[in-house]
Image (cartoon, rainbow, N blue to C red; front, top):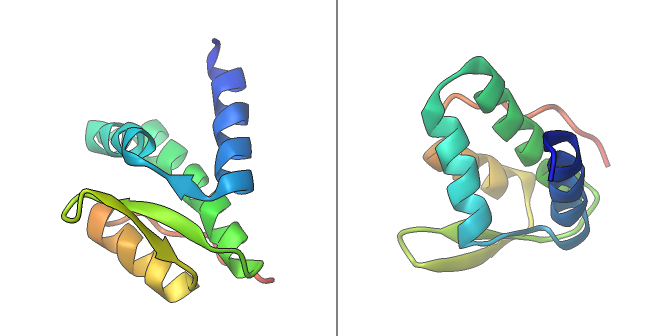
Length: 97
């Protein structure tokens, strides 16, 4: 699968399900850990998809490594805390419902 198709499918998956399971978390963490502007930007775009979902009143499930499972998150503040903990320095785009 080429990169544009992969990105389109991941965006659709995140938007429609709101689930960041362990596999998706690892993909995000590896891209973030690479440290390049393009990979960190990629992570930011994926996180923004989830932030929009939450702003629309839909919950997300976010993998929490310390618990070994996904936890429900339903507020932008809780989501921002999760992002700050796992992806420090990534700025979420401002969204409105």
